[in-house]
Image (cartoon, rainbow, N blue to C red; front, side):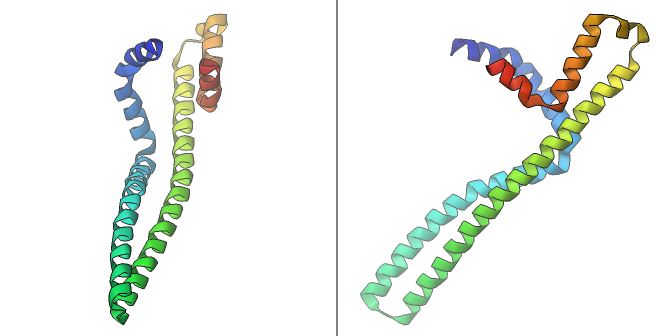
Length: 153
């Protein structure tokens, strides 16, 4: 546990730089993902609120038996079904948006690595250590899950 906290503390200064990289590469996707994230957080609260209203209207319908209470209960049931369907749609859209966000970010990092590799002096390509770093950077930029698996494993 202490080691994880220490590693997080060491990486903390890079959070701003990482956020700028993500924002610069995927601004629209990031905003869409954040909006869906907020929606996914609000929908459970809406369902709880609607459930309270449903219980109250069903109790009123049982006590009074009037048609207005039954209609109100049906409206709340329809709203709950719509909120549940919206929640499922938001979850699916969030997965799709996150995949696009990851792809755009991966493309941006690969482009940055390519630009930096084109800027360096040709003599650097003759050094094995530089070539190893370049090869690893390209591989990690293309498939960051391999890096995470190697680090965590």
